Every structure is written in C-alpha cells, then in structure tokens.
Image 1 (cartoon, rainbow, N blue to C red):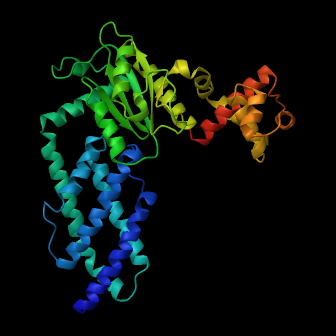
Image 2 (cartoon, helix red, strand yellow; image 1 turned 45 degrees about the horizontal axis):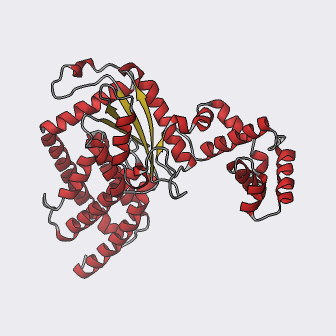
Image 3 (cartoon, helix red, strand yellow; image 1 turned 180 degrees about the vertical axis):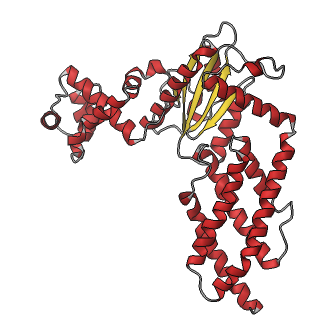
Amino acid sequence: MHARLRDRTLEELYQRAVVARTEFPALAPPYPKLPESLVTSGFERGTALNVDLFFDFLRTGDAPSPEDTAEVVQIALSRIRDGETLEEVLGRYSLGAELIWSRVRETSHGPERELLDDAAITLLRYITLITTRIATACVQRAHDPRWELLERRRAIADALLTGRDPVEWAGEPAVAVPDAFLLAAFRLGTAHGADTAELRHRIEAIPGVFLRLDSGGWTALLPLQPGDDGTATLAALTARLPGPGRLALGQSAQTESPAPFWVGVATAASRAQVPEVFAEARTLAELGRCLGRPHPVCRRPELLFEYTVAAGGSARAGLAAVLEPLDTQAVLTETLDVFVDTGFNQLATARLLSVHRNTVTYRLARVYELTGLDPHRPTDAMTLSAARIARRLETACFAP
C-alpha cells in the first residue's frame, strides 16, 4: 500500500477506534467488583491510552517503551491494589481489543480491511507486551512489604465482615485486630474520579482502619478505643469527610441537594457482632443513596421509620405497589408528597403549592378514591408514608 494512502487509512481507522472505545464501558462495564464511580475515570483513561499507544506502534513499527506504558501499568496496578485479581485485570485487555477491533472492522472495506488484517500480528504483539509488563510489575510489587501488609489487612476485613475470626492474623505483630469497631459503609453518588478516590484515601489513612471495596463503594472498620461507645470515633470520621460531611452531628444541611456520597454507621461491641452491624450499616448507606439525603452521615436513630421500611424485605415491594394508582397522576403525587413532607399540614401544603386549601382537600380526596387510603386518617397516612419510601427504594434499586 502506498505510504500516503496507508497514513490516511490509518487515520480513518484510528478515528473509528476512538469512537468504539467510548462504547466499550457500556459493552463491558469496568471492574464489576469495584464501585463504578471510583474506577470509571481510570478505566476511560486507560482505554484511551491503549488505543493511542497501539496506533503509534502501528504507524511507526516501534514498540512502546516502558516509559510510554508506565501510566497504563500503574492504572492496572491500582485496580489490583483495590482487590481485583490479576487474571481479571489482564482479561479485560483481550476483551477490549476484541470488542474495539470487531467494531472497527464492521465498518471497514477495501484498503481499510486489508490494513486491519495485516495489523492483527501487531495487535497481538501489543497485547502481549502490555500484559507482560503489568504481570511483571505485579510480581515485583508482591514482594513489597507494604503491598503484603495491605493484602493482610484486606484479608482480615473479609474475615470480620463475613463472621470468620481471623485467628491466623491475630498473632501477626504488624497487624493488631481489636475487639470493637465502628463500621462505616460508604455508597457513592454519580461523580467520577479524583473526588471519590481522594475520599477513599482519607479513610484509608485512619490509623488501624480495615477497609474493603465492593461494587457499591467500600466498608471501613474503625477500631474503637477502650471507653468509646463510637461517639468519639464517629466524630473523628466525620471530621475527615469533605464538604457537607463536616457538619456537626444532628445539624441540618444548608442545601437540599443530595450528598456526593453516603456513609451508614453503626457500632459493633465485639467481633461476633460485626456481620450483623455490617448489614445495618449497608442498609443505612443505601437509604441515604436512594432517598438522596443532603447529609452524608446516616445513623439509625435518625432513620428509624425509613429503616423499618427498608428492612421489610418482600413486603417492601407490596408497599410500593400501593401507590401504583397514582402513577399517571403527577399532580396528585406531588400534592401527597408535599402533604407528607410538611407533617400532614394542609395549610402549609397549599402555601407551598400556591393553591387554595380547598384544592388540596379535593386532591387528597382523589388520592383516597384511587388508593383506598385516606391521607387524613393516621393509620392510612402512615401506610402512605411507608409506601412513598418503599417506592423510592424500589425505583433507586435499593441493594444493601
């Protein structure tokens, strides 16, 4: 192929690969065991770097140097450090190459198809080179005492959270395992990248903390000092949280906007209580996320009613169904929401909706007709309130 035609064809293929790489996260979501908002920015950056490096290799014939691939290797190591296996991380290279390659080839013809076929060997060489460098770096890092200590602390966290006593670690002088903990389950909002990573690093820096990531965020086990019922440790944790997290406990947030993250907190007085308290902390964090609470710290005393609904299991779906007759009645739904949020105050509801009180009376009567529940009757009002919470949890895919 003529050099000028080859360069032009390569540029067209590169532009198509750039488009295809943006589709990759939807076709193969990044690192399913880790919180998406924590890893998506690194995933997107890594995909972009790999496409650029491969096409540079294809244009010049010169394999990328270790310096060229240093950032790609570091992104992969970060995922392994966070708990993904080396096999899973390396497997995404083969999967990504196959998906992007097939997308580009589908729209190629003539000289483009010919050039792609010739480039298959170069692609194989590139994938082999990158995965070898990642695996080598991972093996080298495995001998780092800090890496080994991190693995031990993660294993202890897994044992405690699943109800296994980490006996094999109890005698390890570098890792002290206390008897009581404050559990803090973090659930992240939709923001990507550095902010959530910085938050995680702040929590990891707490002395003696054990931390484990999962698909929704992470859970931290903070050791309780003798005589601390959790109050002092929670205050110290809250002081480390950015933005609204620094509000004093019990203080109202200054904005009604949802927090960028939520942390459910509960205290385990012994190791045996950790799994049960872990479930409570996850439920509280998910309540914060699903209800869009403006304050990130979620404690059971502040969410007693909501927690009862959330813990209802199969009954929760039945409660949510109570409001189905209002699905096509946006005005009635809004009126009921405001009525409940104002403490069942009809005058306040009318004022907030800028309507006459009689209009509110009529709308609430319609709610009664459609649902069979009278918002003015205490027991019915409680059912409607619970149904609203259940509906919001179901809609937000509540998953403690």
